[in-house]
Image 1 (spheres, one colour):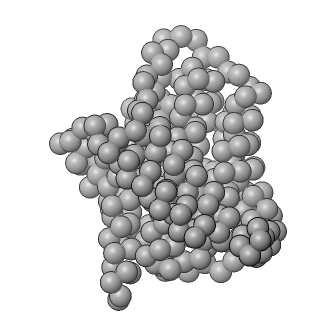
Image 2 (cartoon, one colour; image 1 turned 45 degrees about the vertical axis):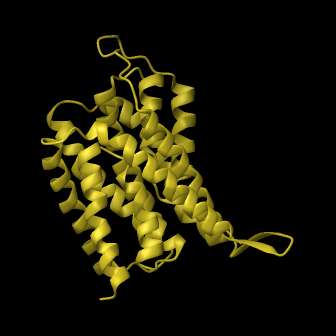
Length: 265
């Protein structure tokens, strides 16, 4: 096993630990690890990332279910348009993107470059929410209200982004649940994990019919990440993960800028 492969599988543990420790965001590292360390092409990496994110979110949501911190009605309302959109994106839109998208002078924008640029922009946006942090809405005792048109629109947007770049999109979903569904922060996090797991795994089914899947590799990588989640959850009882989140956000920002620069240059 080459050094890069060792680093890649070691990074799978880090991804899981980050998820277990800070409660989200770690999965955004999955695509860069798969592309730059394990030498997957970007389309395959985004497909594998959906599986890793989906399984990790299932594991992460169990604790929230046990604590009653999942609003199933909201998950269904938000999740249905997201699930339909992400599946359609993976099954039809991504395969339809040409290898050579467009050219700017002598610079050719390929499908791989386009996907990585979109992913880098998403990383930079996600890093902002990690660095800034989130405040609880304090609306836990109020009657639930639903802004249905905006929830449906947000679900479609999140589904499209998830389908294109293979990220969970929690940094978009959680604020939407707090603002549009008036959920308190902890319930928004638990509910978002249910939405992320369902849309990611169903979106991945759109890839199964379009490209070969190395199941042995994928299950192994995902299993390592899940082990990392349990390690991170244990560490969260010793360390305040919320205090580490801004530092991780700066790391994600640097990674996003690096990927953006590398993809363009």
